[in-house]
Length: 89
Image (cartoon, rainbow, N blue to C red; front, side):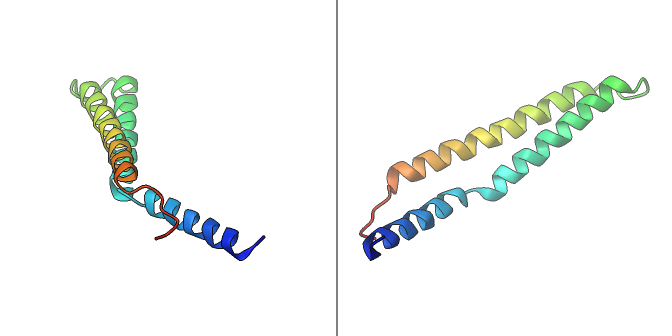
């Protein structure tokens, strides 16, 4: 491989890592919230002595987690559209 191809590949990898790192905390928070909502939903279904609001609360938490996932996807797409890969950078 020539030096230009290696340099271009390294630039692309750097750009991909930059894009993947955007809103990483929000993505992790969405996963944790969805997981907690699923655990709350399962607990509300399996235990007789669980409070009646456990199931609706679990569903709301799962929806909130997915809303965070969708937010991260939209923000990444907007970033990529406004900052496309430029090999001259």
